[in-house]
Image 1: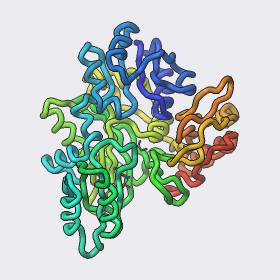
Image 2: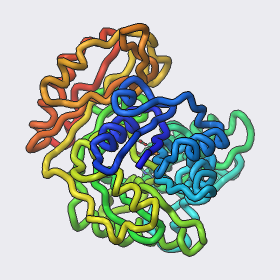
Image 3: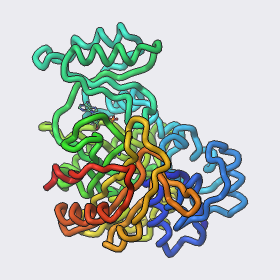
Image 4: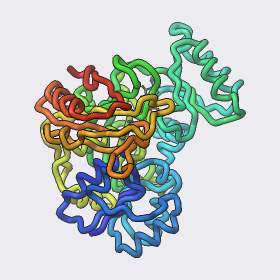
Length: 420
Ligand code: AMP
Ligand code: GLY
C-alpha cells in the first residue's frame, strides 16, 4: 500500500518513522515534509492547501491511505475531499473536526450529552463577556478562563486568577471587534492527555501523555505548542482512564455518529483530573506535538495496518494497540526567541552522535542549507528516549540532548520533573 502523510512537523516525523517500519507499506509520500521526514519518505512537489492537487496526486500515485497530521487541513475539509473519491483517510471530516475548530461547538455538545467539563458561557461581545464574570466565584475573586473560539495554535487561552486579569483578557480579546469566545469556570487538578482511535463507531485507547506547555523551567513564561512530554501519564490511572473513556470520549463519538458526522482518526482529549473525577478541558482532532513522538516511541505494532483499519471502519476487528512497557520522554530543542520571534538559520550538528546514544531525534522546524541542517521554525528538534522509568528516560533523553551542537537553540532541563 502507498501512503500519503500530510504535515511537516516533529509529529509527522514520528509518524513517518513508525509508518516506514510497517510491513504493509510500499511507498510513503509526505508533503510538505522536512529533512527528517525525507529520511523515511519521498517528498513530492505538492501544495497541500490545494485540495484538488492533493486529490489528483492520490489518484495518480495509487495512494491507499492518507494520514493527515495537523488540524488546519482537517478543519478545512481535506479529509472529506479525499474520501469523496473513495480513498480511506485517517483524520476526521470538516464537521467532526469542529471539536477542535470551535470551542463553543464542543462545549455545547458536552452540555447536550452530559459530558463532565467546566461550566461555561458562549459570548460574542465585550459587554456579554464582562456580564458573565459575576457568575464566577465571589470567593475566589473571579478566577475563570477566557478562550477565543477558533483555532489559535496554542494561544488564545487566558487562565485568569482574578477578576482584574479576566477583565484585561476580555479587553484584549475584543480590541479588534466582535469575536466568538467561551468563558468558563477554572478547574483544578493535574492535567493529562488521552489519545483514542475512532473509526466512527468503535474506539480504542491509544496511550496517554503529559505535556509541558510553558517555555520556562518550573512551568514559567508564556505558553508554547509544547516543550517536552512523557508517556504514559502516570496520574491517569487505569481507573481514571476508564472513566474518561466511558464518561467523556464514548459519548462524544456516539453523539457525532448520531449526527451523521462520524469521527474517524485520533481524538486527543485534554483532561483535568479534578477531585470530582476527569473533566474535559478541550479536544484536539489529531495527535499532539510532541506527544505523538513519545507515543510512537512506545507503540509496538504495524502502524500502517492499524491506521488503515481506523480509516476503513474495521477497528473492532484490529488487534488492540500495544505499547512497550517503558516510559518515553521527549525534550524539545527550540530556536532562541521561541515562542516569540525564533532565530532562524542556526546550524544544527550532532544528530548522529545523539542517536548513537540510543535516542531518536525527530525534526520539526529544520531545513537543509546546502549540506548543513539549520533551524527553520520555533520548535526545531524533539529528542526522544525510552527507559524503564521516568528518571531513566529523562537521563537518556538529556544524554542525547547534550550530544547535539545547536548554539542558537535552547531547551528546558526539567522535562518530566513533575513525575520524578
Ligand atoms: P488549551 O489551549 O485549550 O489547551 O488551554 C491551554 C491550557 O489552559 C490548558 O492546558 C490548561 O492548562 C489551561 N486551561 C484551559 N481551560 C482550563 C480550565 N477550564 N480550567 C483550568 N485551566 C484551564
Ligand atoms: N502539545 C500540545 C498540542 O499538540 O496541542
